[in-house]
Image (cartoon, rainbow, N blue to C red):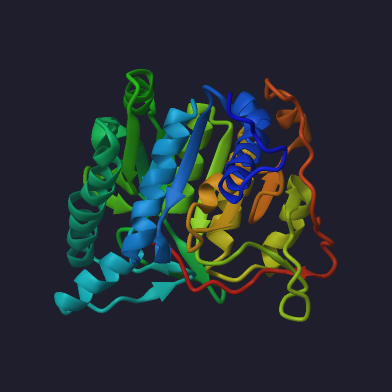
Length: 334
């Protein structure tokens, strides 16, 4: 018989450390097993090839861990690049892309014909899971023309839509069939055409319609900071009431993202998150670790309804609404 040392080798110690991290995920696996998680994907996380691969891996990991992921994506960088190639100027008003009829054709082509297919292809390298669709398909997203005010005056921003209806039946059927729906943020217009809709807003509306347990918005910043830039301590958790007070102070890029989180939680989604998509596997860090990352907006009453491990309070800094402002984010609609 070979005697074993009481002291683990370096390889064994590394394996034990990995096992401890797996065990850390156990309560979160129990809590969210079988639950729908809507993930909004876009921004700089789409530009890096490595981050695109890591994102697809994270989505497949959620699937194998027993969660039911749904991806809603934008494609701002890709749209801007294609518009530039076509000689069409990109302009933004109130954080939203001004979308002419000519630009809308390009937006639709890029989101549904290019970005959607790339995401589906990356996920399906791991198995026949992802099915791509547009917000137009089966009238999943229906929108009316969005109006915005700048300095008290109405401004026409073209074919940009405000979502008025969500018909999630096709997505629910895909989930029930064991698939991962990947949805581009284009909506059917009330005039029979199509509208460009903000991907954050689209993800929030779909999360509410599906009765999701989480909305996770991947963005280009770490989250919200207390008294930025004087204080860079990240706000880990916000209550709905705190976020409502903060909204008027947020930057134009961050405002749609935080409004999306607020709408989701007010609509019955227990938790909504803003996390940094530039960090590899940040999605898994948020879902399966005790500390989490980014900023979470939550409703304790809804959280208590999550089965499994029950209510697990998240440690970290909470908001002081008297001194909190948002980190500036240059992002916006596609």
